[in-house]
Image (cartoon, rainbow, N blue to C red; front, top):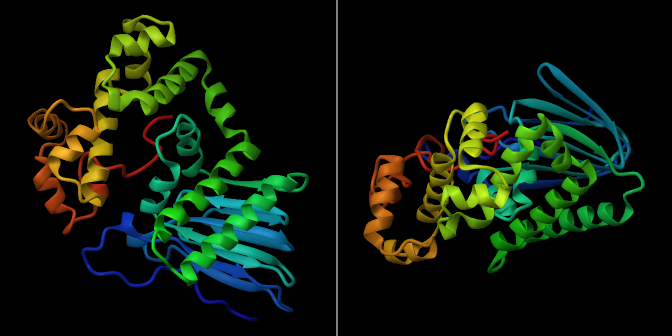
Length: 311
């Protein structure tokens, strides 16, 4: 039986944060025998897995679940559990291991990002038969990501994130998961999802809770009740956490000064931003930025450790 190179991450420095694990893509070539991969054997660098089968059969296992599927299809494993993949003889396609940082960049903060965040922490498969235009887009995006990884150039990380976004949005359209997220849980869930969309669009503009409630067509008290019942936090705290996460990401990844960063997030002055960030995360922006060199951002308040924080 032919064994492929295990789909595990390369060793990282002792303090390298898991959220900085890059994307890795491998082509599944047609062969006379089945091929096997393992993934997420090291929990410290666990990543989400996506398998595109253009032709042939495959099967993935993440204890205790088994996912048999046949091409053309996509299998997304969002729980980052260790597992194994088998691609049958003659199967072709791609498999990828996706770190958190590139996924954050690909998802972005558009209204549709709410549906993407709902989707990426779940395990599911999508048949692509009959989805010819979207299937073509997905295949071309995988080809482009692989090309950028093999021959990196200026702007490659940005371009890779853009191609990954094409794959994710195509999956979102095929799955209908955005509609599922809005339907599940009834009227309260719809209010919560719509509120999340509005937050994504307007958190930099520092909307008040009253303005969010008015836009939703409900009272401020009703919005507070929905949020606290579902998440144990009021809308003001949720808005502040979203803004702090964005600030944390920019402190980690950008070279903007604190003053520049504060203005980009809609604060009237750096002191106001620093007070907000310390109040929300327990540390100053400068200290947070210094800590990024030493620790995993997922362990520090204000950093987006997961996409499943809202239903």
